[in-house]
Image 1: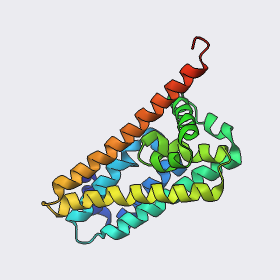
Image 2: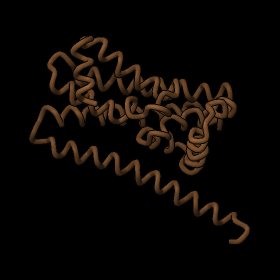
Image 3: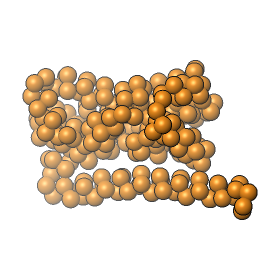
Length: 210
């Protein structure tokens, strides 16, 4: 991803590079692009963009990272309002068994974690696409969603981008940067496993044989 971004930057320059990264982050949730190509709208994009920024003096990590955070917030806002405006049929029309399985998983995740699901979902590929519209469909209060949206999107966007940057510019902190990236990935896995376990426990309680 970092090599592809470097080649892209060499052709277009700083402004278009920023706009391309921000646009991909926005489209990942607002336009459902992240369902089909999560690797170029999520963590890999941010980490690679951060690395490239650390190796190119024409780029500013703070312009990139803050813009990523804002684009992530706006993308989730669009998803939330689409869910509130069009309801469950909006997600049903996405089609495909794999997509519908992701929708059901996200609905259960939202039921289990509520406000925190919006924060945590930013670190889970399927979660960051499906949770915002599901929050809208579920009539989550807007200001409650907005606070969770800001916390999750800004922490995710800024954190992963800055980790990539420090992995490139400072050899002494590079191992730490990779450790932090590993912790972020591990935390998302733990959240997903915990949701699965809670869901399994709940299904057993309502099962006729239990």
